[in-house]
Image (cartoon, rainbow, N blue to C red; front, top):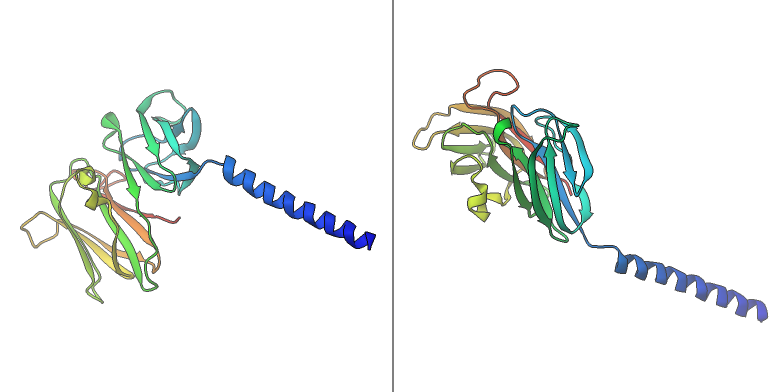
Length: 238
């Protein structure tokens, strides 16, 4: 009998300890936010991303993306040092990350005008045969344009009409993901009123159940090399 009472007491203390740990963890750990960094400045050097004095992304090259980095919610001082390792802060700004929300930070424009475009990522899980897609225009010298994603097999398409450089800040709807069928797409760029694309990107594969950000990068006036007009694709994985 005494042995059973002792075992019961030990079990009760063990359960109490577990519950106390859970309560302590949930009450002392600040709610998280997450941010995603994308280097989209065609002629900027490799860069470092610094939050509140802490180095979060180092030696970041053009076209690279970090994946989501989780941090406690709050207001942060964001610095981008270019070139990497220097104290030349091309971007130095305060930004607030709210609890439970996801953000993308794009380093955009030419090196002499480098700036941060920060957008909120309202993520949701699409159906098993679908994807979620959005489009940003981050080519500094590209003309006012229409961008169309089209699947030549299923004929599914998304049209982004009348887009200009860094215009997503003008309307919240331009940061939203839209649902389309998964598959292989072409991205055609044309000037409004013209039925003939001035640039096409082919064989863009969107895998079902995922979310993607497609963005225009590079210089419209450059035809060859790493700084030429191109598209970038980010998979927004939670």
